[in-house]
Image 1 (tube, rainbow, N blue to C red):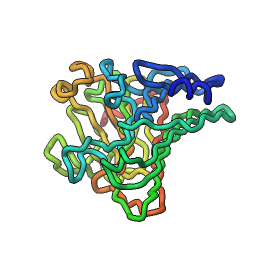
Image 2 (cartoon, rainbow, N blue to C red; image 1 turned 60 degrees about the vertical axis):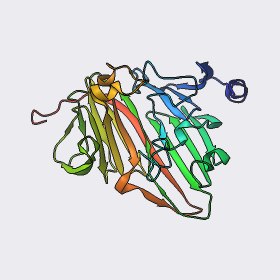
Image 3 (cartoon, rainbow, N blue to C red; image 1 turned 30 degrees about the vertical axis):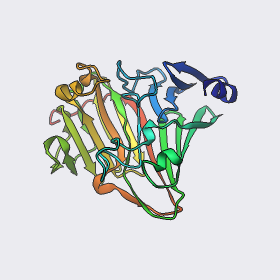
Length: 301
């Protein structure tokens, strides 16, 4: 795979290499750099020009292809969370476990784009019966844009829940503020699925596992001297997750003490915001990530 990717796509600003047993694609331009592995079409790094790493990946993540890399921005599809009917199936669907095909790398006007594809097969039909075509487009510009397009190639309508499960590297998740989720309803998995209303800025107090409903705007993570901005299109849920100290101990590929370094703020269509993808139709979920210097927040925060 690596040799074929190098032969087809090697060019200035594009690097193909092996890390462990996984192929890696690194795109670099004047706006920064981004690294993606075809395993799950998972973004593993985004460094804006002149800035710091934005994406968190576990120091003990597996790179042998046996399971998804812990961290990055996994693609959760065609279900988010536990399978709705079969608890023996992997959480968050099969797309993040699959080897995607890199089909194009394009540079134009200072922007670099890469596109990965995944099609239904006997292996996917053994898990889920639908015929589909998925494309993940990663665009490195002044911000990083990630778009997941799902096409229903079958004859039946599907119910889809999904997410771009982004892990962000932060200085300290404990007490960190997330702006933009105020006045939204949410489901709190930590508290047995209780429903409530977020009536002020969210202050992260791990463990946290919430799905915010009907959110279509920007979420801003107040991370020390910078703000990480998460914008989106085609998404009506935002998920916030940090396992906390006890939860981290249950994750074999995450160091016990690493949980304060990360927080997930995910563009999703989950639970109440799952949608019907009609036969012959497609849907695109887009996440746009940017950073800017921190701005003072009021004492009322």
